[in-house]
Image 1 (tube, rainbow, N blue to C red):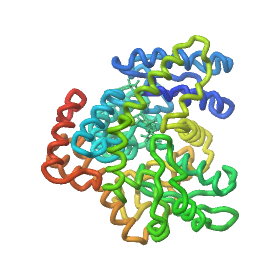
Image 2: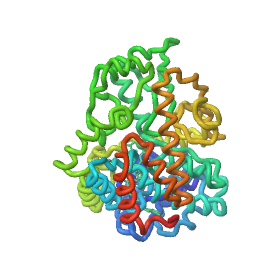
Image 3: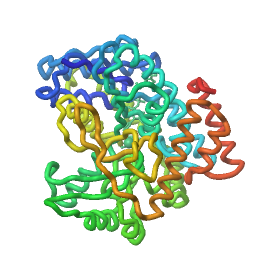
Image 4: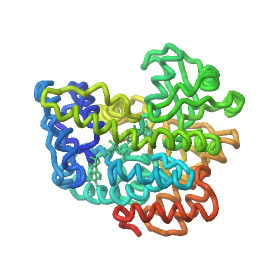
Length: 434
Ligand code: NAD
Ligand code: G6P
Ligand code: MN
């Protein structure tokens, strides 16, 4: 039987992962789920934890749901540790976004200055969790969702002794669902191959009945306003000539790097008019928790589908089941590169299609990226990630400046320093590395 610890258990997404475990009960013999949160999230984890308990009770008391602020008790003897926390909660996200906006930038939570600030807050905490895991559950798998998911995975791989980590994102899941719809495919009759970085993946192949249907995939993305995107990303139409010339299909987050000026103008105008995504999500979260408080509610409410992270639990539960059952199914996950993408360093994290075994993901071989337009930008973004991870560990100011300076989404010159200084100031209570 299995013990699962979920760190950041107070997340409004928790009913989705609980539903995922209930659905897969026949293949996943879970005995205990521990929802862990911190003092700041006490009320949230109590509300969502009680809903989780009602869901499990309705399903026939399949397993025990524990609610705790004691991380060590939750980690002791765990088989799987899922991390889905947000240091500083949504108020910290909104503060980053508002600071970015002040300097006419966007503070999106995984890209540009927002992603940078979130990495700075998150990496010290994940490394602390890893230290606890080394002692309390050294054999457990760490399944990370906490954003920026790729950089968090890379920090664990480079700066902790935990090797059994897999980073996840729902973008590959949504990509598959979108392609299935456009091509009329059923989930198990094709194989997708993606490679790149988290929120920076390219589709390389879609194999179906012995044929590579990439031409059609390129056409779908060239001719439709981004059919493969989560709810937090607005629709957007790629320049079809650019997509067809790339030869590989960019994901919904690539827009920030291919067209930073245009996207920034549009999104800044939109945020100034309608508020930032964090502010919109804060309202949704409040409404969700009002629903969660209802003692008669014992299912995942449909309103949760408005969040960008929809379907993340499919990825998390599928991954856990594939590892536990040695399924050897293909999933698209963040792992140590080890030469998989030859254009990138061996020791960095990459998001690549992998066969999931009981020994973890085995990445599929990826042929070289031939287009310099792809290689150049991917190396640049990896350099940003490497510098950000390093800065989050060392707290070195020069490294922070380098990271921000090379990111296409960050405005250059004096303004880089100004936005950095303000981000460090507003996040000071969450930055022990400084
Ligand atoms: P949230 O604001 O609800 O935070 C989740 C919980 O984490 C909160 O209850 C908070 O109190 C708790 N927390 C904060 N610091 C903690 C700590 N030190 N220890 C334990 N718990 C702590 O966040 P959310 O909107 O539900 O998102 C959760 C996380 O998942 C975020 O990091 C978000 O970016 C990420 N996410 C990732 C994907 C993906 O594709 N990888 C998709 C959706 C969300
Ligand atoms: C997307 C991404 C996440 C992202 C999140 C935002 O699908 O994959 O990594 O940060 O959802 O969703 P939200 O509803 O919080 O804006
Ligand atoms: Mn993601």
